[in-house]
Image (cartoon, rainbow, N blue to C red):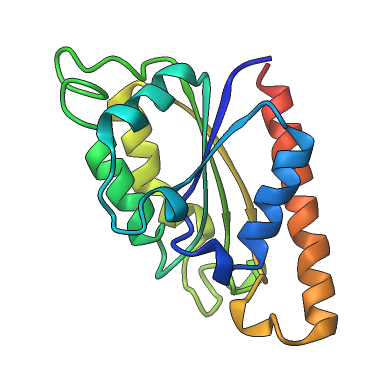
Length: 186
């Protein structure tokens, strides 16, 4: 099996429900996958660049796991990318270290999937918000392998027992869909 690196970009998994559940299920389903919990490793946003570049070098498949915050990944994940994907490592004349590796996004939104349409409240398809990640993959020679996405996993609903049960089931299904995708990439 290919070596999988899952980078958890949630800024505080202790205050998460969906992403925490997805990662717990991923750990059960893919115990050999490496999971980097950025909130635990870098609560101060001081990224250990050599260590993180080593993680990337070991991986065949890179999964970015995060909640969509204001139509993009949380600032902690952005900081990790900014510091780790450096000129000469991930791009530039000699920056070919990620070339050929596969990139998959795995993310959640609080808003339901149906809200992401040109006629809906978000006025865009969810895919419209992924252009920077597609371009990052292109620049770095990564193979863009798409995404697994689940909406309707609202932080605000976590105190409603019925909603909590629905969100847990949906988060577990998300993890299973992600594993199916990753296995299909073998």
